[in-house]
Length: 245
Image 1 (cartoon, rainbow, N blue to C red):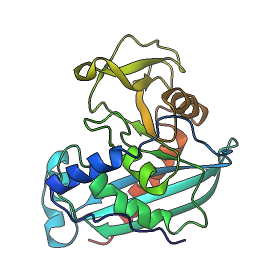
Image 2: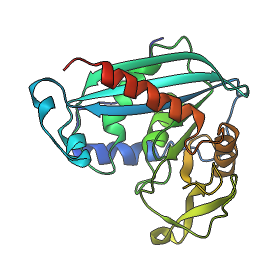
Image 3: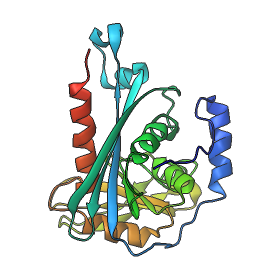
Image 4: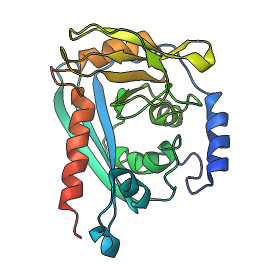
């Protein structure tokens, strides 16, 4: 399946910011969902290949020094959560490591992986931020606008914002608010497993925050990381370890 190219990826950080600000006008924060029959989890991993791969490096330096990126997508039938398809891709990196612009490093390879599917799923879960981003243009939001599809960001850590007290039981959640924007609710801390650290859910595109929380809990299966993005993470990890050199 062919996916249209929307904008250039090999751009400067200043040009990337302009692209984010332009796309921000196309964001849809209310529910605009089809009947959800299929969902997918997407994730990416970075790798340093060839002669430099033997260098010892910290996690953050490894991200900066990486020269290739792996993208993976795992598709499930919903609500049964039975896997029906998966695909992966590997591409050279075109954009440097700059905080707040991760989508420019990950989306090209995610589009490449999505292009290998028979059909784009009805809903996409991204391992990363959506609206909970300094310019409200995290990976899930950026990708959702480009694909004109409902997307949800499900991150392992907070990029911006704070949340209040959170219940210990699975299913508990608390608003993630941006004090610099008058306390705007930009996401939620969501407890997917009792007494385990929450995940941080935010709208991608065409999904309300309440619906994003509900659907994240619907695809959680007693493990901290919801099943779609967890399986996508396993896929890209497998591809990474199988790569030569």
